[in-house]
Amino acid sequence: MITMDLVWLTLLALLMPINGQLIDDGILPPARDNETFSLYEQFPRGRCPEGFYQSGDECLYFAVDGNCFSWQQAHCICSQRVDRLLKRVSESGQTIIKPAKGARQLVLNTPDKMKILRAFLQKYKQANYGVNVLYDFNTLSRCYDGIDEDWPEYCEDNSYSNSTCFETASNGKNNICLREIPCDDTYLRVACEFTLPGSSELTSSKFHHCIKPKVADPSSTSIPWWIWLLLVIGGILLLLFTIVTIVLLILLLKSKKSSTDPVVKTDPALKPLVDSNAVAESV
Image (tube, rainbow, N blue to C red; front, side):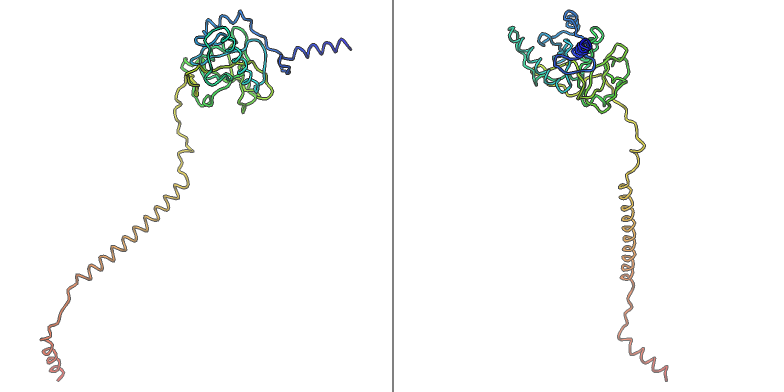
């Protein structure tokens, strides 16, 4: 019994990450430091501190130590690790870089970030990074012209269609896909970024996309009921206006005709003559 208890305790210890929380897959395998050196040659750090990769006006950091954290912890962990690395840079006498808006979890919004995530998977089997996507990701339209090979795609086995949390995963073809995950119980590798001082934060995705042609929707071409109502009311008012106009024209013509009829006037001097002729006829 004691032997079995020791076995179970050993297995349980193997399933516990450094932060003391149980995860499904255990601690993810770390990447050796000498392996990541080639990534700095492929993706140089530029103006960013040591340990970061520069992508546009942003500095990217990828944890390769195998430690996992929950989605809710990611932002806090990014702030702590980036601050620690920048403090180490300042202590070494290098130029101090202050992030424009602080550190944050990686936002997958450029082809360069997709290339780095793919390189981590293909060379070092490093996946399961927690990432964000911008609001416009689902509205952009791919061109399928051979230029957009760095466009991230959703994994086919998504089980949380309404989720807003994503992790990078292998799609089985040695490439990265985005898997929707439950935000409350998944443990991930940490990927962070910050914007270089003097630069503005990206607010839209920079993937190669084409303008989707507008297709006429038959339901949208039908005339709303209130327009029909206005047309009926307008037709009735037009008919009444026409009738009133015709009646007024008729009355106007009649009054004009009566005013132009000749008036016969009787001469007073002829009146005695007429009266005498009438008396003679009666005799």
